[in-house]
Length: 228
Image 1 (cartoon, rainbow, N blue to C red):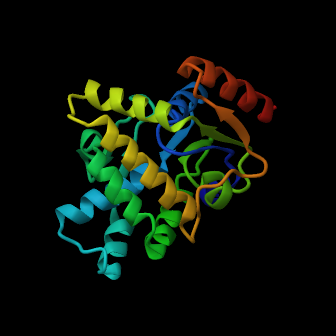
Image 2: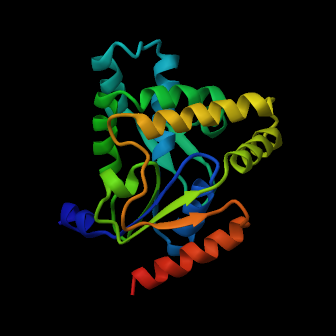
C-alpha cells in the first residue's frame, strides 16, 4: 500500500544549470505545498564529499556505489538548504565550490547516476514531491505533473553565486567562479548519460531579470493550475 501511494504521489520538477535560483524556488514551493523536497544536485555533492572523507577513489566503482546506496540523507523543507548526511549537518561543507567541482565529476560516472536514480525515486512519497536538479523532468520523473526549466545568463548566475558565497563568509574569486560555472555547464550539457536538456513539456523561465519572488509567483501559478 505504501509503495502504491508513493508511485501515485504527484511530482513537480525544477531543472536548470547552477545559479538560476532553482534550489531556492524548489524550497519555497515545497514549503508552500507542504510536500517533500529533493535536491538532487546535493546528492552528488554528498557522494563527492563522503568519498573524499573516506578516501574512496573514483576509480573504485564498487566501493563508491556501496557508499552511495548507504547514505542516510535528510532534506528540510522548513529550513532552506539544510541537509544532513548520516545525522551530521553538512550544508555549508557541500556548498563550497570545490564540492561542486567534485560533484560534477561524480555525476559523469554511469554507475553512480544509476545508484542515485534509485535513491531519488524513493523520495516520491505522498502528499507529493518537489524535485530540483538537471535531469529530474527528463530522466528521473518523466511523468511529473508539472516541469520547469530555469535559466539565466552566465554573468548573472556568476554574480548570484558570488554574493551567496561571500554572504556565507567564503572567499571566492569572481573570474575563477565564472570559469568553473562555464566548465560545469559544458560537462552537464555534453555528458553521454542524462545531459542537461530542456524537456519538451517543461515551462522555460529566464530568471536573469526577475527577482526570486517574481519567479516563485510564476512557478506557483503554473503549479496550482497543473494540480487542478
